[in-house]
Image (tube, rainbow, N blue to C red; front, side, top):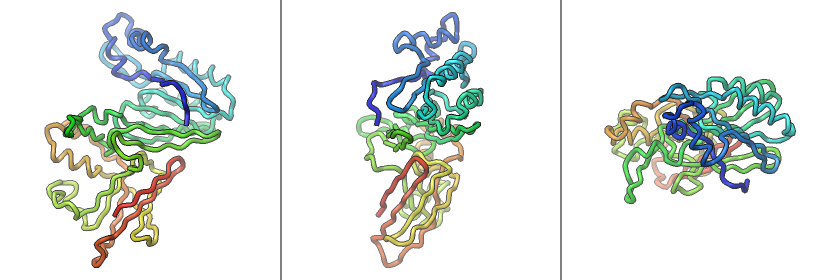
Length: 314
């Protein structure tokens, strides 16, 4: 793990606060630069080289797009000339690269750098994307948010909203471990045990699910698993009572808890209803119920190139 003073990146909300100033794109970052320093910088920690960029590109006085300025592209190009080829590269910026209009220009500069990690935000949901270039693959983790879905939803006994994100992921952050040549990461839900890495739902257990459109027609014993921080390359296996490992099927489907919260809170989750998509990774497996076994144990194991998670469900 890295031990380093906290670093920051400019967000879209930071930029919006200064739009009244004279030179829009320069002055959008004025308050940030005054308080924290440059919005574009690089630093080393061991064999890891971090590059922090500001891709919140102002347009007019009230809008912005995801774009990396020409001066920042020159900065990255000149910076990498001083970085050894065997160093790990980590990019940090606010808007995801897949929503950055000139991300291809950055990928071109990174050619020959092998595996590059990009940490981004903005979407208030967790995603993983892979961008490819000449001898370079950028693995992008859109990291969700500690405030979840903009602090929307039912409040707990302390008055804190659930703020479940539209991908089905609870409010969160990620923990990274870097070695000399590689890295691994794990999801950490706010206020949740560190071992909680997925959500498991089995049809037929909760009788209230028959009132929810997306759940009422599920087959008895069908299991849906939302793996936090998974990607298309994540492999999920399940077994019952130490039996044979079975491969789960990937399926794009609205997360169970999102469907529940949206159904139970149609007013407070109007924003969620308007922004929902069907691109969430859900693992589907139809379980054969053992009629004479009421203490059935279900164990799940997920793995891909950078994560490994295991959870037992009784």
